[in-house]
Image (tube, rainbow, N blue to C red):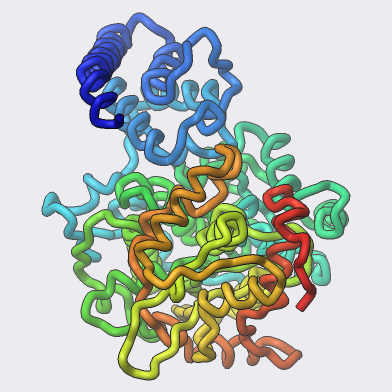
Length: 568
């Protein structure tokens, strides 16, 4: 039957597809030709329609690109199209940020056209050799005003303990818990936390900050509101823009008042290439360094990633004492899964090393692995991350491989590298505030226990907790069934599953005992600044049970899925 249907309709569908492609080409050609005749907002709407469908008349200026069906890949295409039409750089992160609507994006383009202001890009920074990136290309002079760099040679850090701290990325998953931890600490000292939040105005920025903690009546939301009244200032800004897009007076105030900077903001997307992440992550970090080198030196606590370790080449592990400029002076990497993100963090680490070497700027860099759910606060988990997606998908499909890992002949046991967000945030704040003058520290914030607790263990725990999961002996068979079952789920649920990242699960994982990178410094450094006994936590069945109850509470798992769930 199928061959006959294919034979009957193949030509019709080929003609229809060719017709649609031809129509889209005409639309794009018209966009280029009419750019001087149409308002920017109208051109933007037309460009959006050409990529995600719909009609210009039905698109509201207050709509966000993601709400119209856009994703990170179509955002790259939209950024390329707009950059080509207007001959300016339109950052991908601007288009997919939840803080900006189409009206704001059009105003951004209008302003860029008027000021003719250009920002460093991946192409203008690195050599033209494809997929080859040199650390020596990343010079601060390429990013920062020379007057700031000239004056920075004479600066010192503030003589008193940090009482005014700037935090970026506070509306993100880890960032919100850094904000909570810093608010607690500063509350005891009578200090102030300043959060720069991506939004078009302060009211929207404040709302985004508060809403990041979930429901307004939750314990964590009430705690944050109480601390915020006395110790929080929220600014609407964008670290990817010169001076965060703030007015001169506000920038100067930050330069003189801020004692320390916690930089957690980043465009975290493992599908986008380095060039698309460059503005948010690399330019953003250069603006942080610019502020840190203005008026007085401000120690920086920077959130990097374990993804950097995959770029070090033949080096078996990224040691905490290594200078990244020497460990990875040249990186040859194609934009495969997560490589672009790792490259952007590598570039940030290089810039921070430069700032420390030339100007004595104190820096603490944390390279984090998977950041898991909060161990106690309900509904506090990172829905878009790979681990949460996989757990949800295993429960909804009811199938798992016999093992997620390649077979090995030795007795090496696999291990899953992840830490709860509450431990992670506490470690970053405690260690980060104990910065030594002129020092540069790298701390690998990973779960390095060689305990044999792996994704296979998690599957067994799910079964013990009452989830019905059937194991499939052949990995390829499992992957095929897994994908088919995910495709059968409602569209509204598919976006939260492993389906968007299904190719990352196409092969069994490498067996790694402990973490990919060594972590000799974490426990001893954390213990040195803590009055309590500190132990890096193991992944536990209790935390997996919390994931299940959180996913149910958030409406992603129904009661029937968890009908027989038992407490650990």
